[in-house]
Image 1 (cartoon, rainbow, N blue to C red):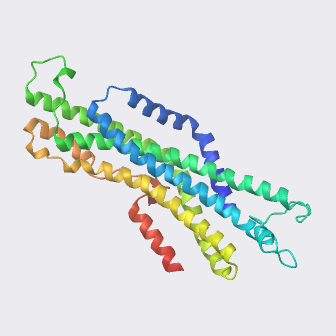
Image 2: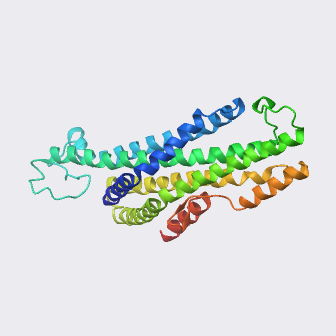
Image 3: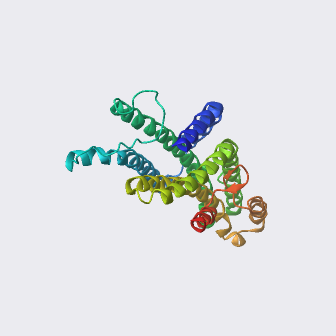
Length: 314
């Protein structure tokens, strides 16, 4: 529980210190959706955002349900005293151990109410912050997806966009690819902004996640003779792994989207357009990513590596 509160405190401090940068990122997203997008772009973006919405909502519901289960298991002895009473009351199990400097037996109901509130609060902070991170990463992914989709299909822009109808088809190609390069620079800048804002908190969160999983795993082994307690720590460990996977999944989206540019049929373009594309592809030869403390790339591959380390440890 201490790890959960520390994580929420790190997130809150980070938001207070970087609220202007976060607002600027959200304004850029708002301006993008208010810009003149083509119909096929809107349809393409809606499909991407719907998938992200489903996964993010699933993550939120899982986190809330896991918190409720974690908090409810200590109530099992109380419920069993009502359903299957014994000659004496079963021992009281609190959600977490804390010193209130009052009689815990006399005021146990108040302690339970306070514990439920305190347990749910950091979870709400975490899922809210993670949802914002996921949506920012999703927008970065969308920016790269639009550019790669245009280049992959080698689409020509609508001639109505340009007032000079005397341009040749090759000139339209050149203008189109110049527009793609500009869009790619916007995607690069937006991704770099996300990385600069989230680099430090993700580093702390990664460390806290690893410590939490390790401690929860030890507690599971130590409480195997107490099924309800062991189940609580299992829920906590699984929740920490799901949280780490959610962060890695958002980073993997950025990597996948930024690496799709090489799937274009650039070699079929004319010489003038190829010059633009060569510069473009050289600038994007390495996929963009999100990192934690510039030490750990958030990706599915690294999540698998970390997961294997935990499995080998236990």
